[in-house]
Image (tube, rainbow, N blue to C red):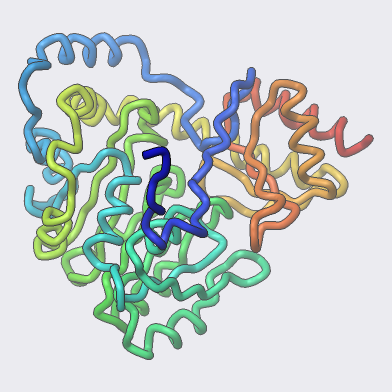
Length: 354
């Protein structure tokens, strides 16, 4: 027949996540590392890929890479889980700890996929908005958690898209105040130089999410991982898709992780450029930039949507949040190469000056 029944009811009002991926000369919108993997490491990775038997299923749990990550973090294999990017692991969080009759505490504005995943799994979303300066409303969060009905919480540190770290003392208070699973999304922790890793052994309800996409220049290869207590990882194992990390990604990830120290120069450059960009943005009349601990900067400007379009017309793609709830009038620029950043700042000055 030429009709089809409706999809699941929870999809009716759900808007698909749109990364706004558009072709541009300067791509400063997706918080990627602007430096590609160096050629020597690429050659090593491609050599490893040539040895992959493509007709065989991959190791279901990517155990060789899992062991590398565990050893470097002083953990056992059972405390690490690989995923098809951080996105898969975020969805698995909602599958394992959400669902009908369960509640997720969210702190908007933050990564919109968190709330989408909750809606997809029939999880009730409890929003505790951030303050006007985008800092966490710590008292409100702790008061809401004290009611005892929250099942999982995501604390993004640094927060995307606003850039600030979550205060360590707040996260520790939160962990001590609830038995809800607290995921700290550390996708950008290499740029903040701050991690909650030292507290894993003291808090079974703490799990850390990390990714290869940002600091390790591997956004094109989908790899993320969790660090957590064995009992938490076991629950994620129950809901994950089999063979979700393909064999090619596994061997590339292994090479990248073994060479991770070689990414330090690009990380240092990004941090230095971020600080320079913050200083430069502060000198542009009408632009308000928010402090960042990551590889991107959120800023407000009048007629933000128009400013975004004019930058795009000049070949510069940044992220437009100007019509998003809690972020009205805001744009986010990823830290690029020094040359890309110079061009962005120069064009922004011209556009704002009219």
